[in-house]
Amino acid sequence: MTTSFPQTYKADLLKAIETIDMEKVNQAIEILVRARDEGRRIFVCGNGGSASTASHFVCDMVKGASFNRSTRFRIMALTDSLPTITAYSNDVGYECVFVEQLKNFAEPGDVLMAISGSGNSPNVLRAVEYANSIGCRTIALSGRDGGKLGPLAQLNIQVSNPHMGRIEDGHMAVMHMICYYFMDVEKCAG
Image 1: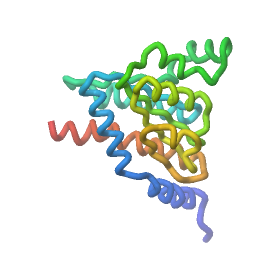
Image 2 (image 1 turned 135 degrees about the vertical axis):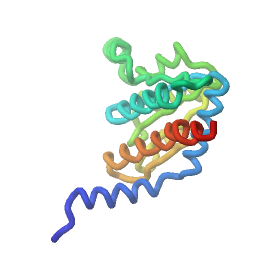
Image 3 (image 1 turned 45 degrees about the horizontal axis):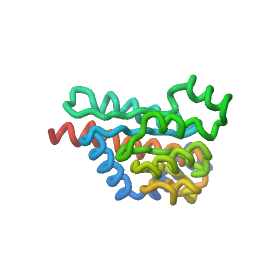
Image 4 (image 1 turned 30 degrees about the horizontal axis):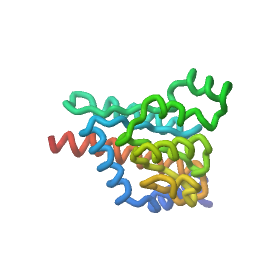
């Protein structure tokens, strides 16, 4: 019997996950611990599937990693205000939908997590450029060769695979590694 597509996808996904640098995931956790402990804001953005990943991650951090804790995460997905996104898209341009929100809320020492499978989304790149310019810490979740986003961010967690589905799967795995650190490890240690 020939190998089924799901078996092939699973094998290729496992190879994609193996490309993730676990030390960089640990560094992202350290950045988020510091941001939480200093009362800094954390912003997350991305397009399409990456927007869904941003929203999912923020939900996990707001509830799972913060509920019943004395110190909580001040985190928001820049993808979640559809009226704001559509107003800027319609009236100004889609490339500014995230950076303009950062101009309202971000301060030096805050954190921006930018997600882009291609690493070349103009609105994500502009957000990272602005965050870097005002002294925010920037974390990228990129795919393929990292695109322009990888070298632009201060920390790049890359899924080195050409397939967008496997890149997005890898990004979600990284997000769960991060948020479940707070839910499983810190909860047990505390």
